Image (cartoon, rainbow, N blue to C red; front, side, top):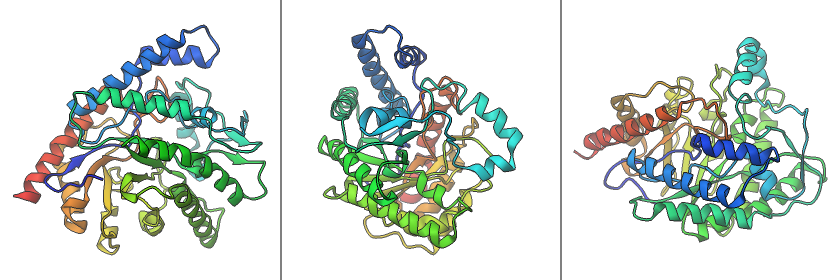
Length: 384
């Protein structure tokens, strides 16, 4: 895994807005309309190329495919794992206390943003049979598209996101939750391995680790027990993969909201660091979490590990000033070592294929440009 040995490197969390014409094709396909598979495949291929080009031109050192070919977590899981069925009418909202505290806000928000413009119905999945992996063709296509997009472009390193077992769906088939999660991660291991064997870094996306600690219906002991099981299961799925080939991303969700019920980083940092990864990506730019760099005054970063704190946020159209980004980066560098810090984003900018992204697509690129400039300013301070 690349480190910031000579300058502060830049990356982000993965998902980026899809072009409107690709969204149009996705919508037709999802709803069973007539479409040409070859035309669809070519447009996904070219959308990945456009996304990589824009990332590199905006100053991103460690890009990805922008998840251009994925409809979102739920559709992605149903395409690649057997044993699941959609369950309409089941609640998707995992931050119930937050919604209960601000019902008027979230009523407006869900109709406008999270559900309003999504291409694929956002329907929870339930496990009703044995889980196995069937996404070999899909992951190979993703890898091929990304590698083709990189030809002739300079990137320090390349990563590809994949879902964590804890985010796949609800169990109605296996005897216990633990047995279910092990079955899921056994299947996902195939995807993790395929990404790494292709010469890419695999990023495991796991916002559910933080959600456990935001669930007041569980005691502190119950939260910790469940979170430890999640980490144990994920590490089983990462067996045989060198930690330096793994990035772990956790956050508090993709939505713009008050966030007053988010769990503090100090509660989860110990568990996060138990994941067998070489780098850890987490929220650090928004107003609920920016102060949490102080956590690293008391928590020692293990030898050989890298932090990817968010220095731009995914839930605001305000473009962070490069000097503020530099300030955020130097704080971390002074605490854990400049070589152990890579500039990142709080979360993805379009976890679902949707017409209504939180941050306007044109603003995303401005944020990346600001991040690159902020990293340059931080480099000047840290290497002068």
